[in-house]
Image (cartoon, rainbow, N blue to C red; front, side, top):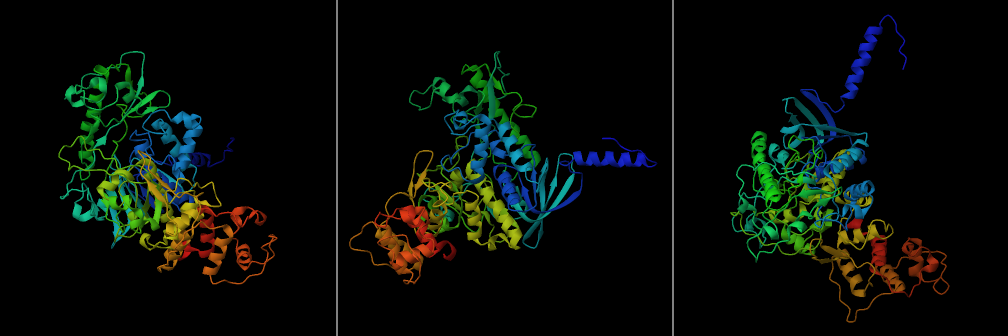
Length: 633
């Protein structure tokens, strides 16, 4: 570029230089700065990134503040880059993130490298993908290196957050809606929002499996390690406090109890093998889990306590190197930009938990249709109840029954009394036991996406989160390719039927069947099964809130019979149309169905085949079109 000099050229050059310097410091935040935005996301973890992304895509101005240099939280900054759950429910932004992993590594098979998960990746690649997704949105501003220190409120409404960094620079961000997406629910405490922490008492949750008395014990955390193999010996110095007995029976060859069931050491190392021959060590069986409740600690006290958690992992690494024969395995160089090569943060399995408008418990997960919370669903999960309490023997004993896949209601994200705040990450309103299923990465990503969508709706309609119309939020989530009911046999790509099935499911007119299944629980709609007269009567009963006389003889309905019954239920309205059916061109029910678009699933009315039995997904389409339960219930 040629610059034409003039009498004020020195001044012009200084202005240009200053402009370039300021432009190059877009992510830098000067001390005592005050910013304003529509949506503030506090925490750039698994839910924070998706919340910011969805809010921005919905048209809101967003600022995301993350304490660490990375985005992605437990997926990346904590190094737990083996996703748990939702493999058959690649919903919304979770599915988008997974597709980008597939593209980078070369397909689904390329990320099925360990046996604990179907999707494993290097943490730095996950961080790169999240940065690509967020920086592609012009109305997202990312600020790293700041942690929340106080919350500003107007009466009971959160209006903003004060932050500080290691240099004691202060930053205030005012926002119409703040999304709590920190790892430990710190904004809940700063906002004086009522919350729970630890094991809940049975009297509170009415869970048979909960202890009689509450405790302050949360799940163990872990400082994961990313290892790789080197040609030379990588054995570290013996860490302080090392005792081989602590790791006895971590794997078969290192176990002196022949009756203890554990995999062999080679299989253990394949547990979370990542692409490019790296190994993520997050081993729960006499491994590197560590008990620490840091919820109410100061940031300085947390940092000191985390050093002990790190030492647990160093001791386990030393044990693997010296006793397990893995002396050539060492910390993967360049994975994290930390001095010791360990992740930026530990893997927190549990945080503070909001006392929200809805409180999801184990009872809801076991028997969703015994309650109404499924009607307000905004996210899905399929992971079983998985708790880590091995490093705290004083934890009240817990039993974990099987559950089907599940939905999370919007009310779990909304405080009971405080306005201007939506809660995401692991701090939603669930019981301690239920947290064992809702805390996993894909589920948390979806919680964040719903929080971002809800925030944008509140901005657009000038609402508080608890006043939001749930159907508007659910429609946006459906349009974003999200499952709200976890029906694994209906995918968003089946655009004709998917939303109809989801909507009749959300209103209870047609129900799915839950199937607890190992580490990937299921709920089936049985979309291609036949639809019976009793099914239709049950739908009428749910729609009209009236008892229906059950038929003495049940039978599956043909398409024509079904149309005639629906038409009759609507009062046999008259219509006029020209039908392509030779023998049925004068049937009033079909004329009305044709005029009102009930026949769309058959891709052309000439293929209607009136005497063919109607399937459940076809019936869902017509019920959704004809009765419009989603808009009315």
